Length: 411
Ligand code: NAP
Ligand code: MG
Image 1: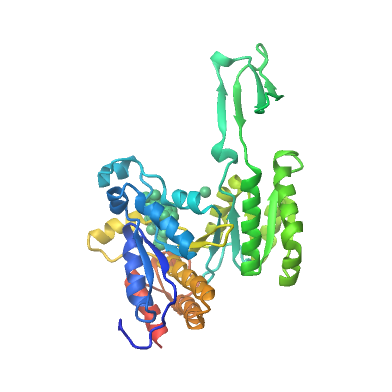
Image 2: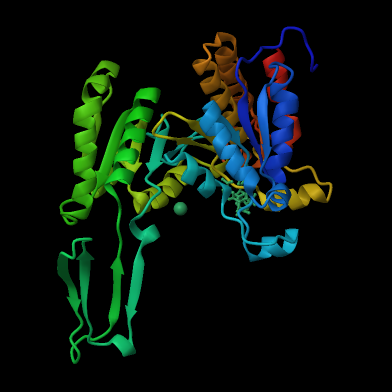
């Protein structure tokens, strides 16, 4: 079918970041079955597979990040983040950093995770009829904290926060006096964030809310954390008042702040359909809760939005290693390709919108509809089969499932 005369053309290439294991297999099938028959794909290709990262000493990841910054839109396959076992398995010369961390460090920005809802696959919270997008501030707080054990050798210590300015000016605050004979040991923690990082997070969230025309919720614990969390709230409010209040009103969307515990209660009672901006730790915890409650990690997409309007799309799950080893043994797996398909459809749509390519925008929606309709008709992969509330559901292999989507796209 490739080479069909009526395939949709692209004006600007998409940055394509290939990856590892089962998702690399799925990646090739998405292109073969669902994209190339319909679109004359133009991509700038970077192979972020672990062997190529080893061969290039990870320069390929840096090059890919700069390509996304240059061209504006990228789509990424899941990749291995090496640990000691992977070093052994692939004979790596070092523990390369997570490609996602490298990309984020270069592009900056915020990761938005959004579930894909399909008729027939009900979320655990029945009122959640629209997706809840979680925006996690992925800098600082607990994740860049220093902590200290006040053990025998430090028992009875007085622990202080000390700030020393370049001028020599100093400010000290008592954290705790571990009184020698009373309660002499314990733990302490020091953490930080920066105004610039918080502001960049606020802007990314507000841009994405406008982009997707959804309300933006932000929550922290400023009643208890009167300086630290209060700073987040103040910066969000300043950015909103300065640059977004009018645009939000025009788009008929809202920004609202509430306490984190109130937010959790409201989220559970809500119908979904909004962006929930979370501080780093809240985002780590709540994104797993939301993903699980919506059914499956395999139905969760993820987009990195930089404050200067660059987009990188991917599936939220990893390389599905266990399935890959089955695949290597020649067994057909029933791995869910939906998040990978939706990463491609969203990236193509963003590219198409930037290029005013109506035919490609239309195709991106048709691909998503064909995928949803295939599942709603009862044809699905094993993970969804286990969740399906219907009698006519069938469990298909990955490839057979994708062939059904392709058939719907043809039809
Ligand atoms: P994983 O790939 O997310 O898979 C964990 C388990 O979740 C799978 O074994 C499978 O459960 C289920 N699952 C995930 N995606 C699925 C899908 N599409 N279809 C069906 N089931 C799915 O996590 P992992 O196996 O712990 O990690 C493997 C590698 O991925 C690691 O090297 C890690 O570094 C990397 N990783 C990469 C990214 C990324 O690039 N963004 C993110 C996370 C992890 P069952 O086994 O029960 O079927
Ligand atoms: Mg987590």
